[in-house]
Image (tube, rainbow, N blue to C red):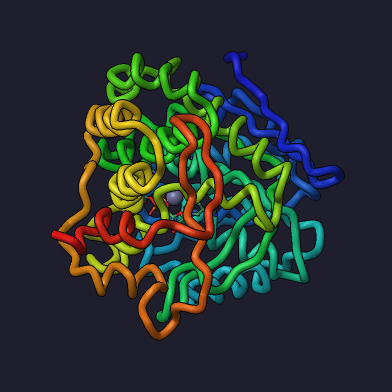
Amino acid sequence: MPQHKVITVNLGDRSYPIVIGQGLLNGGFDLAAHLRGTDCLVVSNETVAPLYLEPLLANLAGCQATSITLQDGESFKTMPTMQTILDELVATGANRDTTVIALGGGVIGDIAGFAAACYMRGVAFIQVPTTLLAQVDSSVGGKTGVNHEKGKNLIGAFHQPRVVLIDTDTLATLPQRELQAGLAEVIKYGAICDPAFFAWLESNMGALLDKDPDTLADAIQRSCELKADVVAEDERESGRRAILNFGHTFGHAIEHNQGYGEWLHGEAVAAGMVMAAELSAIGEHDIDRLKRLIEAAGLPTKPPVIPADRWLNAMGMDKKIQKKQLRFVLLHSLGDAYLSADVEQTKLQAVIGADS
Ligand SMILES: NC(=O)c1ccc[n+]([C@@H]2O[C@H](COP(=O)([O-])OP(=O)(O)OC[C@H]3O[C@@H](n4cnc5c(N)ncnc54)[C@H](O)[C@@H]3O)[C@@H](O)[C@H]2O)c1
Ligand SMILES: [Zn+2]
């Protein structure tokens, strides 16, 4: 049996393992043993299903497994798509013991998890993430949901999975640009809470871009450990969990301004992290290290040109809503993030290019 690593997300009676390794979908893991009952619905999409649905279902021989294949893309992370999953659950006679399994990237994980959270007020849920971003970020922590036409992730629920199964072999088919976007979140973990991991990434970025399986598995493991720790400390984001949003206030503004899809989330977060570092009182040397690592990952270090008023508007800081307090995630130093409610306005203006 191939080697695999196990990390536990400690959440009392909702604790669960994250299993990381090669060959897990090809007989390396007894998935059937982790279902709540004997029946399950696998949710995937038209890109991922042809690649990995058959191997996944082979792991569920002896169970009553059905599947639903959704269209691919963020634009389908909506209530109407969610309704088709719920319809399928009803049509197949799913009950309180049914398990919903997400097979795909973050879009599939978010929508399948939300369906699992809602069906019969909550049924069991398993994540089988197949993008690097989903493996290091979205599959861990229990945030699920869909988009509303007025905003991303406006509708959702916290619903923890009972296991996260990460087969690193699935990354072999992932487009390089998607891999790089996932690396932005990996770099984020080093930047916010683990200076040694940041330094390790500086030495290993080449191997990660070459998809070296062992190096990828190590990076995924460390990222999941760091996220699991933060989530265990603050499951519902009343405080500390917000540090995971490092680079995201600027990143979301970039995504929002460019129209979702033109910049991948990870690309926007990469440029956003540099901006957040510039807003922080850290030395030029640390800012340079962050820029160089982001560049080495083939990711942008600069945002597109956006007028200052649009930056502020997208960040919820325009005049109309200035009363709303916006907390920035800033760095004391590389590997040490904190939340700050008051940023120097002149510095912020400089970072968004309002003074040029
Ligand atoms: N719940 C959370 O905590 C959380 C955290 C971060 C992001 N998210 C959400 O995650 C979503 C983004 O996730 P993503 O970056 O994985 O995007 P995605 O799910 O759209 O996947 C990216 C693309 O890769 C394809 N793909 C997936 N696995 C593949 C594989 N192994 N081989 C080939 N192609 C593959 C997908 O079909 C898609 O076209 C967003 O909706 C975001 O809001 C959620
Ligand atoms: Zn992110």
